[in-house]
Image (cartoon, rainbow, N blue to C red):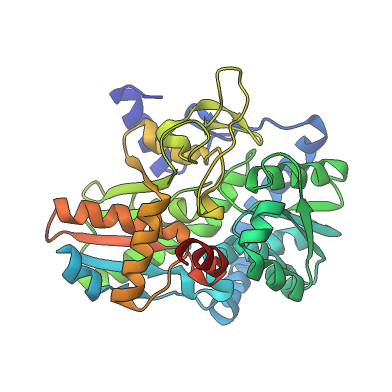
Length: 408
């Protein structure tokens, strides 16, 4: 979907001023609340409590303290000199892989766990694909003293076995989902069903910037610390701003967290990289923005992958965390107004970039940000000498079963 230039400027001004999402949860044409009537009171209550939480100085101070002492923020910004020599550009990596539990997911999980406790929830449910959100939710719920059940597709449980064990060790119940495509979409379906069954006693700790309002806004607000830190760190290290910012995009939480602080900087180009999977054909990838159409999935109107009969397509990606047929509505808006460009990297390209990062930087990235590394390299070689910032959303320990099987 393309938006005319005048309207695009107006929408960007509203986004930068904080007027979006609007009172209906809309980011321009995208977003909204497409949810059962039984969930509407819970969604309204969550928005009220979240706004009160962010306005409460004591609550925010306590969360900031937890971020420092328990999560390990701020995470470092690393100058990637090995990649610089290979790419012919200046490269910095924002190290969310060094946050507690090994990915950016903990920023959102900790904030929502505090909200669940404020709301008086008796049980927390969550969905997970690569397992990083599940681990983060399990850890955060243990921290605040709430029981947690994590829904995970049976296929993802096989390829992300280390994270399944970590969740259980942290006290969470891991519920195997053997329906549908047995990946993140199916896990999200089941988590929603558990929430619908008891919207007052159950809190749904949604892991990405998707779903009905207020979740896309709430997750963005909890993840934007990534970009705020990175912008300040980059200015101190490089004496200015990056020429280009790259992050991988599945549902889009790590990317919107990094991008948000740079949206008003016209000199900084923004690139989101989706999972190109095995190819451009239907069912071969998870590139909702590159290959999708507008539609409703899991409570939000955004870009998604579906066929001519309206049936949501199964997706394919070597990275479980990107294996989702939709994307957050704020990303759909950024694409429609032309503020961010969205590209796809294939499974093979992600594996190539992962190996290069290991060899040249001594860093094992997760398969998800490896997609961003590949696209950043391609852009660097076309734009020599430029300054590049890459969001490294998580570490690759969780991917060892996949890497062992794929590369053996």
